[in-house]
Image: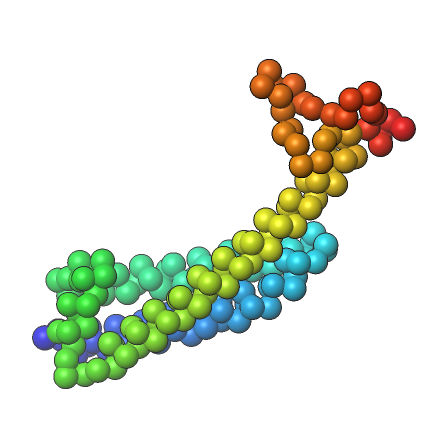
Length: 160
């Protein structure tokens, strides 16, 4: 059994992590449309906001890990589970932990969707640049000899 003060600190930290992760989930949902758009400045600002929010979440994670290790448990999944078991009969820490894991799964899924949106946009922009440069669409950018490939006998749009 861990001390009541440590248990309360763990509960407060888990609640803060849940709140921060919930903000991340909402931000990631809102960013779908932004990342699909063409406003580079808005995309950059949104990415910076996400980065800042991730840093806050990482600080909370470090605080939780310090609490868990301070109670004599490892900071890995098994250590956290053992720490939660040591909090019994108080079920709040375990309930909060499972709620946090659910939100983290949502955030991870939304982040993967956003990464796919960004990658698709990047590929479209790259194809447009390749066309402007006179390179073969969908083809290799470089030959085996390391030279750029272009249309046979064509000139780039910039020179036309």
